[in-house]
Amino acid sequence: MLQLRLGVLPLLACLLAIAGGVAHAAQQKQAVFRVTLTGTLSKQWTYTQVENVNECVRVTRGSGSATTKLSMKKPVRIRATAVGATRVGFAGSLAKIAGSVVRSSSKTITMNGDLPCERRTVSEGRCARRKVTFGGASSSLRNPRKGILQLAPLRSARPARSPECPPEPPDIAAIRTDLPIATGPLDVKDVFGSDIPRFFISGDSTQETTLNGDLEGKVVERVRWTVVFTRLKR
Image 1: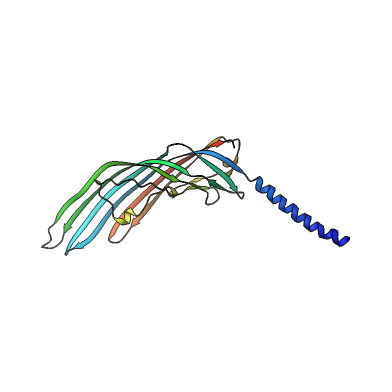
Image 2: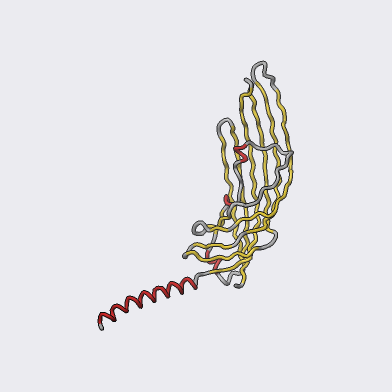
């Protein structure tokens, strides 16, 4: 009988541990919010490109800027779930983001060199404040590490380019200014504090890229956004 009782004790301990784990999962912290997003993405560039064309030197100089304004047509429902003691998982999409892009740019080409090259300067184009709009874009919320809120890259946000504006070189066009450049502070206590009905998180970051080689230039990007959380009763 003594051996039988000793065998039952480990089994009971195992069952209690499983039951405790199930209870902990059931008590996992959750919160539901109505969420809105506003933001501004700006990109400015200058460049100089030197090329040899038929023994003549062609120097192209250009500059430009693009500013994107973002806002959501209506709030969306987002569920937050505790991931361990320090992180948060978010379920739901920041959908129906609308925006406008105001763009300006210019480009000048100078040809020079020894004869028979003819020295001349021409302006290939210039546009000031051309505006295009888009809708139906989306993003999502991330908590990649403790204390940090990051937004996913914008999806389905491809406004038509104004044909009047000279395009920037491919190396500059490939630098895509997007929401993840900026991060904001995330406090788990705000997320799961039932006595906090509403709070907001803002991100603001600037980064500069320098290009060297045949194409020399500089690109300055700034991303600012604000996400507002309004707590809902589950």
